[in-house]
Image 1 (cartoon, rainbow, N blue to C red):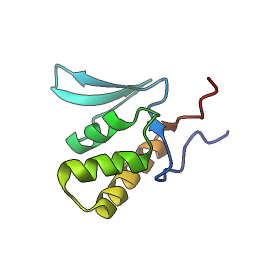
Image 2: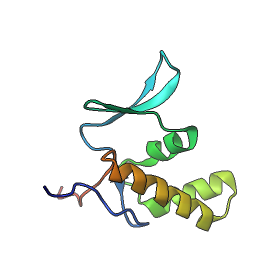
Image 3: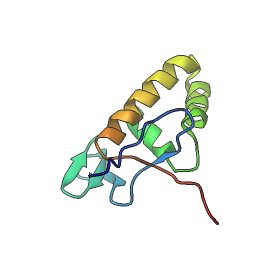
Image 4: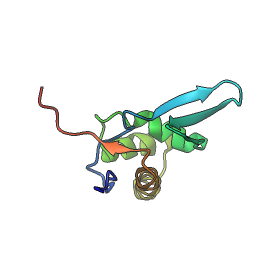
Length: 102
C-alpha cells in the first residue's frame, strides 16, 4: 500500500484531503476534523493553523503570518507548526497540494 502521507517542510503547501472537513461542532462548541469513521478535536492553535492550510500557502508563509501576528520568534513557530502538521499528515488528516495545471 502506497503511503499517502507527506513530509512536511517549509515548502509544503498542506491542505485537508477531500475526505476530511474542518467544521465547528455546535453541540460541543469545538472545532473538529471530520473524516470517515474518525473525528479529531484540535486545540485552538491547531485550528488557527488548519484554517491557513488551503493548499495555496506554503508552510513558510503560514509561519511568517503567525510570527507576525503573535510577535513571536519565527524559528520557534516554524518548529511547532511543522511538528503539528507532520503529526496530522501522519494520521492521514493532511495532504499536499499538487502543482496546478490550469
